[in-house]
Image 1 (cartoon, rainbow, N blue to C red):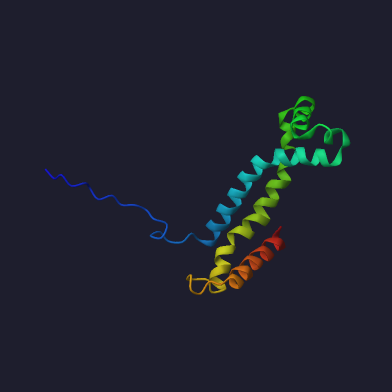
Image 2: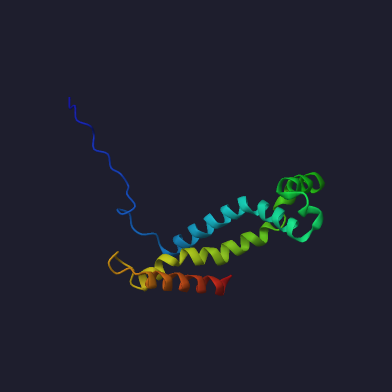
Length: 133
């Protein structure tokens, strides 16, 4: 009977193959859609405060309470479909294409990665996202 611990195999991010372009864009879009689902009610409240003097006097909590009491909780997600569409198109490409753009601009090792190259990669990814979004 052996007293040594069994060898465990760990999956490090460096040992697995890099995700495909489609996976990167899909993961970025999924994360963006999930995020906007949680943030959207705050945007609804903020917008009501900005456009209505009645709501601006109430503040965030009062505005949230008034929206929920008059229109129901679901009203906090009014217009979320448009936000999902924007995130699924624009943000998924902007975030998902950043890493491939970095590689295309020569950011493969810390020694070859400069601020200008990362700036150019981010600009290119943002430009591609803007074309789609």
